[in-house]
Image (cartoon, rainbow, N blue to C red; front, top):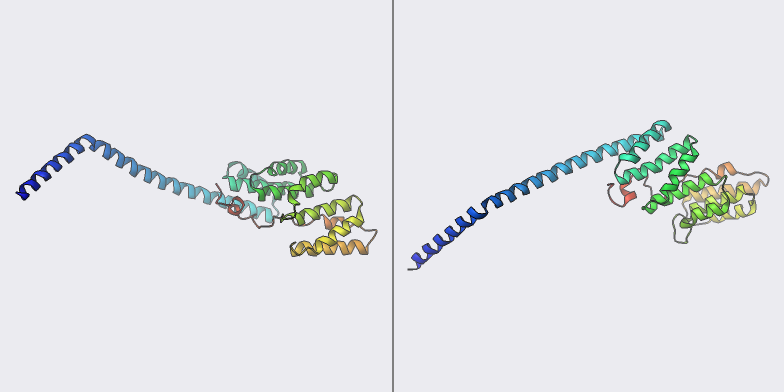
Length: 246
């Protein structure tokens, strides 16, 4: 008897499956097709996206090489193009490099305009680097109050940018004729253990020169420090974004 009941149960189950398949079979097949197409489409998109990122990375590398070799015309053209059509991370850093290419060609107004735009960037590393570079451009002609206001976000006691900002302000004092104050500021920077070795060495050299040459200025030497962020990101857009460039 148990075998008969089992056979009947299997027949009922089979009949139910057949009814369900007749009713929903087309829907199941369509869903499976959609799933397969979605997976295939996603894989195709990933392949395309990776290909595009590799192309942008190569363009960025070529533009950087042009700048390093002194071909600022090509660097300007390449970085300008990247700033318009590259993913956000590359586009933002390309603008920062573009400003450098403009400065190298004495296109001050264009560089200032671009750097002012970058001071509002959502990425603080980019915004701070733009502030610092802009401050150096303006240091020769702008009043100290304006430079101080521009650098204010970089000067808190816990900011890694405070020493670089202090160097700009020391130079501004020197240009304004506040020689003794400038010497004091340079000497203080030279003694800062948390400042970079290159900045300490540069500040010590300028302070020593000013002290030994009361009638000299050393303004040229004081105005040419490297303007780079605390973290090296110029060639690493991923670091600048905190994630991969998008």
